[in-house]
Image (cartoon, rainbow, N blue to C red; front, side, top):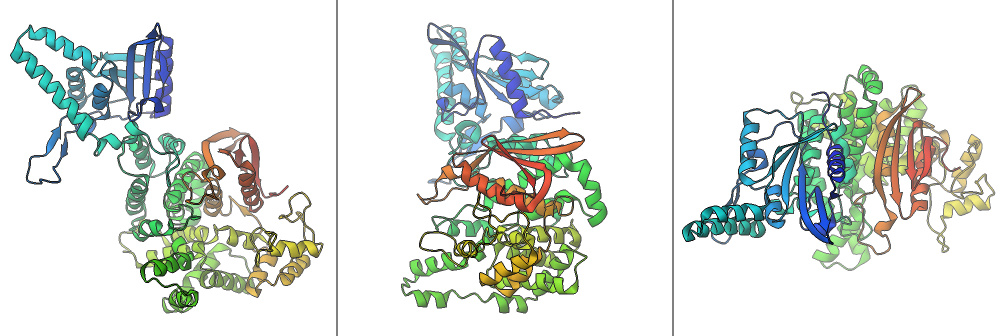
Length: 623
């Protein structure tokens, strides 16, 4: 098989086919909810629908009754000893037959599907049930089996009964029974599948449909088969997006990293979401992974060989570890917030000082006791090889303080990953230490508070507090000192600032020595994809992934988030260009974030378009 079709491609071909034949096509229309049909086509006469066709496409190479028409067994919860209700041939298309009794229902399958014995059984089953089959390609759409609406099928059987009361009773009884089974018992679990019901677009943690469909196009990465499986089954899934993200993350870690993904983050997520301004992080990680997987797959020949030569590890394995773990310890960073809430709710502790004494977490002694300081040293030495020893000491001190004082979730997550790797079974590992170190470095540096310091302070995040006016105190101080701020954007320095000026700024702002040494030294200057591909990609994908990250607060509305419209991979002058197209109702806020990212990332092959305005990752954010 040279190329596997995507669902989007097949839907476009089918829509064109029916439109050409006088039908009006509609794809995944909310008009038919709770039915979520992939393609609905109709013909009207005198404003009345006279013909309806529904098509359910599949890109699968192998078609079988067992997979597409399984028997659904529903136990009686109140009477476990009772016989379960059994629905033979349970599937969305069988539901459509009863929900749309006048419509002809078709399965559309790709022309590369294997027409073996299983297929022939599948074909005979469809013929018996009145379900049509369409052999589909871009060039042609062939009706292999004709369809018969449920209403016509009942009428034909009644005519054949030839007024026999007994035969008529049998026919009506059979159809009523099946009908009720589908409409009453179908809700659990099949009726809730996205292919039928859709989903709440403004729900927490929803996975982008665009991003799911992009996985159908993967060709190179080692886990392409699993992600294609996810894409082909996603709209048929009954599980929540949280369950799907957890299931695939655990499976991918075990199969391709040889590691067990910890269960704790998913459980902590529900606690963190009690904070009304908290943004979802668990499904977010999985979506960041999917974006990067698609980008890496398209750049694969260009970067995979060099990365493997340097680290003896496949780049997509490192990306899997980094992306799905980068916010793992966000709960620890917010430990105070949710633990204080816990004490208040459960112990009814009201006194602020009492609560503060209860929630002390001594990370300093914990790190020393667990010998985690060694992990920071490993990360530092891997981050850059040509430093002087004094520079290494500054970076080690910076990461240590970030972990102990700030409880920075990126640094803590990186340490957790290294510790998890050390404690794993050496015989079952499928990624080496060099690969895990690359992932840990990306995780440890992905947070804006860290990468801004490493690239040289620009005043984006540094603040000793807020003035009554709401202005950042550190920015106000810099402005009062008439230091070189851009007049166009008050938060951004002009491109060239001398190192001694940087030191004066840090000193006047009262920055800690361990911060000042890093901020003034421009430790790694710009983060280039060529030198730090995993770190670059993690910062890039993390900044563009907003979908499903809504909060409970009225002050932070979903309209402030951006939606992924498409990821375009093109070639220009032998360069592979990645353009992410975002749509936002608060474009200025998102543009401001992308400007900051574009200041630290340097590779013009990566671009972000927000409501039509394009920004290159050229190391010149701020303008």
